[in-house]
Image 1 (spheres, rainbow, N blue to C red):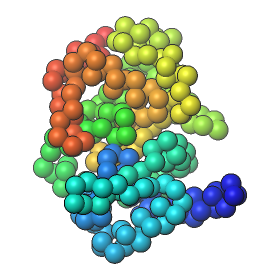
Image 2: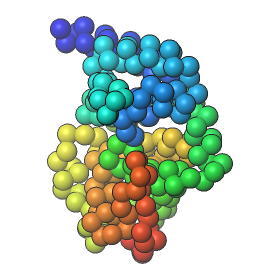
Image 3: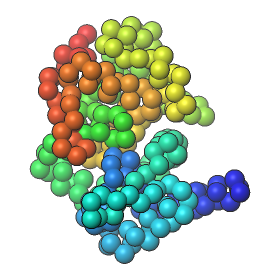
Image 4: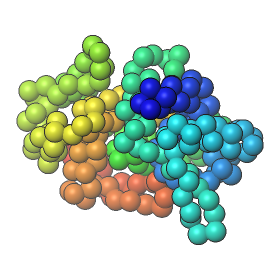
Length: 226
């Protein structure tokens, strides 16, 4: 049975549009109509792709009032997408029409939002760029590419309330480069990305806005500091 499941999963992931759908659903539940508009795909095509993903056990239907939506099984999907994105640009989904509109309008969703359980959008990309520039995280090569925390980063994260012990104890990848939907540059994903967002929320720098949008309540530079 495990072999059959693996075959179904591999087949479901062997399509750029389905990868894009999964990435979109990691940012929150959505209906077929919402996905079609966001990704610039015809609704029948979205429904067909969702059926393949559901067969593979990667998405499940949920009821939202009178509407039927879909949600991604984040525990299974996030590590799979992280691994695929790490293989290189060929596996990365093309930007959607809605992503372009979000950028042109500079919407709250573009500026700061959640992606699964970490910070995305302009704010998320900016945080990762600062972490790298200051040498708190460095790129890690190998079988599971991602980021490693330096000695300076250990001290900086501890000072800012980031629970590195919890991140390392997680069964997820520790720190990944998660390709941002609107910015097409990476923000920090994985268990470390989750703990960074938790620290930002605990110290009052961000709070949840409408839907996936996050509201920046204090300049993030104050949290990043020196």
